[in-house]
Image (cartoon, rainbow, N blue to C red):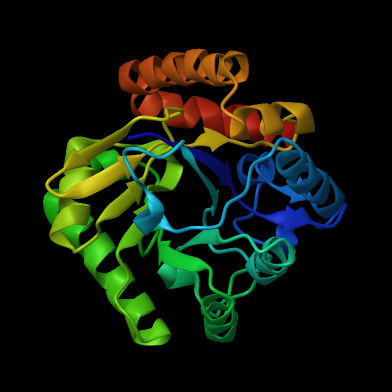
Length: 261
């Protein structure tokens, strides 16, 4: 069983990076301008791809299913949902629930609109921990259980889908998600392979940054090998740096981004 996930965050108008999602230079690297995002959707469609089903559409015998996912729960989510709905596509929106109804993030009304349009809404934790893989078991269970409960209360149905903040995966993160009733968990690892831990399916994703060429996005969506391999190489390099550097890696990244802002 295989799946191709594209990892997006926010879309913004030029010069208004802070209008949607988390502030700062780090999150800004993942915020696409509206026109570029629209061009990427056109290119994905031109490559013969579409995103029309939720995780329940995964099947072992089918070609890899394409998932368009959007992390953090920024205020641009309804606009993204409208662009996808115009094509009959379904988006997966992962919400940091502590930020609901706060400036630059989705409102309760936004979530109901996304639900009514047929999009999938899932958890992105409560607080968006900086290094979720370092959280204790109790913290992980709280992040997942409270966030899915908050979303279920708003949406009126169980929430069983989630994504991991910041790409900090560990098996305990997945096990805690499964404990909280999450059955599909998106990571940030660039892979098409679908794994299962404690009954929870793990799906990888390929990150789309502000500078990612439109042709590259379309090629990944279509399952082309070279651009996927490049992301794998970069991911593995970062994975080693994170593991070896620990908190030093986080401080170094903050310092670099501070200089760029």
